[in-house]
Image (cartoon, rainbow, N blue to C red; front, top):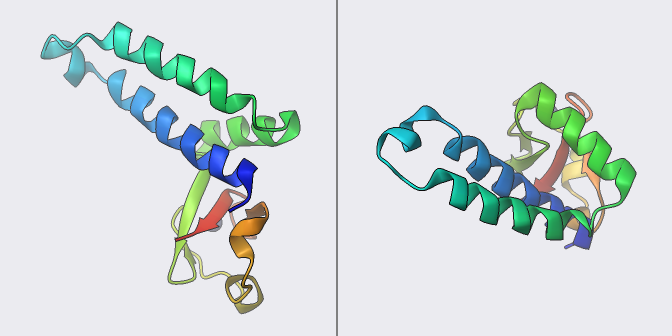
Length: 112
Ligand SMILES: [Zn+2]
């Protein structure tokens, strides 16, 4: 897998966790949210180093729009916008060896 793609997937996982921790449910059960978020932010800072600036900028823009910057493709379908990707894209053998975006919604995609 392309190292930047791998970093984007990890970054997205962290961002999802951070977003979940910021929900009021966690505060109610007395969970130490601040400490957890601090640790996740630290891990996030490490991952960001592996991502080129223009890719990160695009990711942040996508995250604002869709609440995530990267989405898996399952059965040839983008899991962000649920559109079917062109066969030419889904049949490539090295599809996870480069950065690709969904032609419909523009989100970064990876194949599972
Ligand atoms: Zn899409």
